[in-house]
Length: 277
Length: 254
Image (cartoon, rainbow over all chains, first blue to last red; front, top):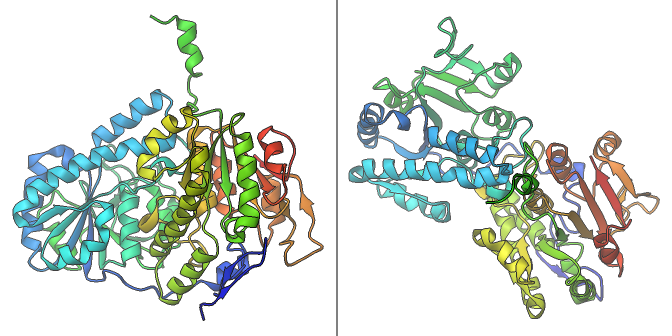
């Protein structure tokens, strides 16, 4: 029953609910809200992240084949594509940090680079229904998807001035991998695929260390325990994955190898799968 | 050309700049103040107006009972945390707009987050910017480690504004004298803690707290806001004392 309980004078006017007059900080109350069941919002849509540094900054050679593959895959799959920033984003951070900008300021300006990449991808995909969807229009996603469009979103989450201070260093901890992953978690998408320029996860950066070993599949707990020096994905994604309800599996694939994305969309294992036990 | 010393004065090297170092960030509670209506809100606003010429302020506002009701319905509908967080923003925005209307005559102005960049303009013209307390994470709110209530709510949102601005103070205005060993509304033997460090507070492992736990976590990593104050907005004079930097309520520090 949703009944209004009027308060006289300085008393509070409440609405009766399971949380009436409760402190939402109370541990027992918080635990009582735990549920493994969450409404799947876009369960037949694939969430794809295209890397800035790994794909966009390589230009035509990397993007054209990938774009063709996306257009081909559109016949069988619904997709939302999130894009990252890349080199210009790193440059922004370098200058911003040198100027002494706080982390919230860096987070606020960094998204502009992913916006550029989103525009580039939208233009490339326009003939196949690529559309740029700002977050204010997310409630319209079902319409665009059912019309056969490919929504393109900025990967960077809107933490903006409200970005959390990082544990170490000065880079905003919620980057574009995290933003795309969180959308997959909230919307319970069918998959979450990170398109990078390496075959997946290695025991070290394969570009610097040729003896680095490939890891085809690993649980998020094991991966955190390995405490790798370098990762092809933001650490914050792993941190969130530990408490995820919906996005319990992600795949990192090499977007420079043609056919990989199609296979991943079809549920095949072509890169590294990180999963929550 | 400016002299070198003047440039150096601008900000010490390797330190994050303070964007608005003389501004006080106030958080007005939803359930604790707004839901009490005129009897609680009017005297508090009166005190704010009286301090307006001596202290620059930004006011963030919480949600309260309508947020709780929306959360409760949304959870019954199996909504994920991201949707629940988005619902939370609406109520805190309503409350911010209410304060905007009440304070308009005195320069109170509601600033949506899209206009946050020009907050300095409002402050420099003697206005009191009023913002929605909820951080703008919405669908991007991280799933909570326990339960489904978003961990980053209005205390976190307003605290992070203070941290970003490198503000002079962060004052949480609630309806209790400060932090107690337990909820004083339920346990009358609960004791008031006037000053405590975040690590001590974590060691106490209190079942309930007067501010969101995430604020403590963020304080440890914060560059500027290493101290917050919690005061009773139902007692006249407390806000004035806190703005003067005097002891009032509870101070939590790192």
